[in-house]
Amino acid sequence: MSTIVFIDSRGEKIPKAAQEAVSYASKMAGGPVTAVTFGAAQGLESLGAQGAAKVIVARGLTAVDGQQLTRLVCDVATKEGATSIVCVHDATGKAVAPRVAARLKAGHVAGAIALPEGSRFTRNVFSGKARAFVEVTSPIKVISLMPNSIAITKGEGTANVEEYSGDVGTARINVKEVRKAGSGIPLPEAEIVVSAGRGMKGPEHWGPVEELANLLHGATACSRPVADMHWRPHHEHVGQTGVAIRPNCYIAIGISGAIQHLAGVNQSKVIAVINNDPEAPFFKAADYGIVGDAFEVLPKLIEAAKKLNAER
Amino acid sequence: MKILVLLSQVPDTTARIAFTNDNTQYDGNGVTFIVNPYDEWYALVRALELKEAAGAGSVTTITVGGADTDATIRKGLAIGADEAVRVDVQPSDGLQVAEHIAAYAKDKGFDLILAGKETIDHNGGQVGAMVAELLDLPYVPLASKLDVADGKATVERDVPGGVEVVEVALPLVLSAAKGMAEQRIPNMRGIMAARTKPLNVVAAGALDAVAGTVKFELPPPKGAVKLIPAEEAGKLIELLHTEAKVI
Ligand SMILES: Cc1cc2nc3c(=O)[nH]c(=O)nc-3n(C[C@H](O)[C@H](O)[C@H](O)COP(=O)(O)OP(=O)(O)OC[C@H]3O[C@@H](n4cnc5c(N)ncnc54)[C@H](O)[C@@H]3O)c2cc1C
Ligand SMILES: Nc1ncnc2c1ncn2[C@@H]1O[C@H](COP(=O)(O)O)[C@@H](O)[C@H]1O
Image 1 (cartoon, rainbow over the protein chains, first blue to last red):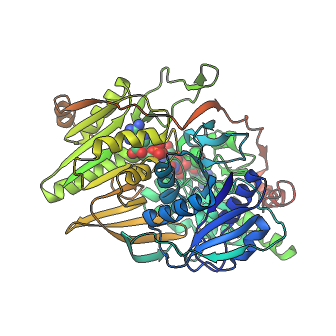
Image 2 (spheres, helix red, strand yellow; image 1 turned 30 degrees about the vertical axis):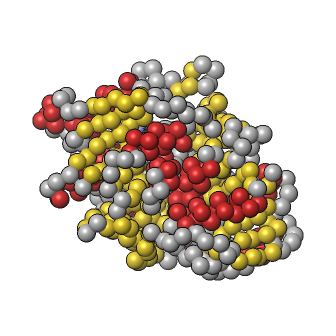
């Protein structure tokens, strides 16, 4: 009975979602776990604070090739006799976790949102409109943790970092180019999101939306028609057919709150809605609401955010 | 080029979500079912575009499900797929779906296998990767662009904080996300043609279940919204800071 956790930590900082996954794995195991990662990861010993006794890092792997990473994870899992394998339900995890499950004939919980009760896990289904309890019956379980679902453990201790020396085969996926999506915070990781819809009338009016997001240290998002009309880039489109997000705070301006939009944002902890139509469906899903014209409300919000920043 | 598109059936995006049998089953009563948007708008349409550009090849769809999915499968044929396959079984989880699909695709020599990013009911985002593993093929999730030339695919994939352009030799499996193609509305000719295109029903092999949903639950109802007068809009920021403590 041991637990391993696979994370993508290729930069100087260990991503929040990776720290969450290690915390989750160690809470689930009720003791220390082994973390597996790759690339030029730095500061890995600090994962001891989240409950990793050991971190195994495959320095030779720098890109996400699902086959190589699956061999890495399965090799470590076999050596450690792992019965639970925790991953993150993000772009890297989606390339690896289901493959590991298929290779080991293990049940896969895609997007767990809470610690299990026994072998029963909770995940969101119907795009957040319901929850499902999943029972895993295989001897080995693969669990992908939805980012921003559990608190990071802030314990003591340093992990032992070891380099992986096994053979994971040759890469079949060749990375040609990496394009960063601006300097801002990536949308799925943002804790505060300021989002706007067709109520903004045109792309030339996004200045105040961006300003408010910057003042609140958040990211910007938009509804689907706004991306379809090319007012905003596609990666900002949130909802059922766009990015699904679960920030602590979602501020929606001039968005009606169609069911497909809500499906991507209804997991936000707090929702604030600004709309000039008191009948807009979004108000039913909101914690806070302002019935008013976005063009009059936004300057007031910006002013208040500046005041808040000056005070803190 | 031989392309396989994984096509799943889901409740319409506006369908009411309710459960029966002591919350163990989705209640499909009175619900309209559609092709999963990612499978239809992106995976299937891009497959058709690639075939049209090459002027040769075939597009086959595969669905794991009961006879209740046939109408949805015909929709895929109406949009332009050449033929459809249905593995006749009600799968209990994603790994089973993948095992049935891999068993069918194993010796058929597909150059490309396209899945959707995820099903909008199950939200697993897992079946494509599992099929790839079972067939020992490379897999690129969350692909927003796909081009094929000289036996190689060039794919743009969404990664945290940006986009990666990757090159992979065929055959390969990928999951299609927004950006890959534009939705196509089937025309009358397509709908007529779909009636006579082959829909091959194949028997499913026996598999053990390793995981399954035992119960569903609706989220607790939201409390009433707290309204702030527009003239005092700035108070929202204050409340988000002091009361909700989220900024
Ligand atoms: C299969 C399917 C999938 C879909 N997926 C998505 C998805 O992923 N994401 C998504 O967003 N949509 C999605 N949609 C589209 C969705 O149904 C809605 O059409 C869309 O969300 C509407 O966008 P909107 O709220 O910006 O625009 P509208 O519905 O036009 O709403 C604009 C709102 O702005 C308000 N407004 C206007 N002027 C002002 C002003 N001056 N000040 C304040 N408020 C103002 C109006 O009262 C209105 O409520 C999908 C649809 C389908 C069929
Ligand atoms: N029953 C099924 N039959 C055929 N393809 C499926 C089925 N379920 C899922 N898929 C494919 O796998 C993708 C991901 O599904 P999921 O892992 O359930 O989110 C879908 O977009 C489909 O392309």
